[in-house]
Length: 132
Image (cartoon, rainbow, N blue to C red; front, top):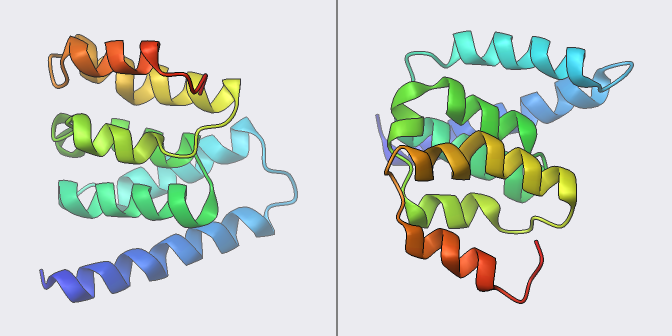
């Protein structure tokens, strides 16, 4: 796939996801789970790079956490492609306990457990003066 069209698709799809979330009568866990199922099936055949770009777009520009993290988790190839650089990027802007919990239990912890990132990354976060 052409990287430029891939990026245009990511921007368009992330805007559609945001619009769909904003149109929900109530954005809660059941609603998020339904969206997660829908998009996980829809993106099943997409490349790991596409999924990571989409997640980054949803985190950076729309400030979602759980949904993009879980899209990566459910796309096994995208999850297996996670390394320190991508985790650091996806963790930028974390500013609450719920976002820490979502990031840690869905991506960072499992990636560390599975040997995709090394102790040094986790230790650097633990030593950081930034609590988040």
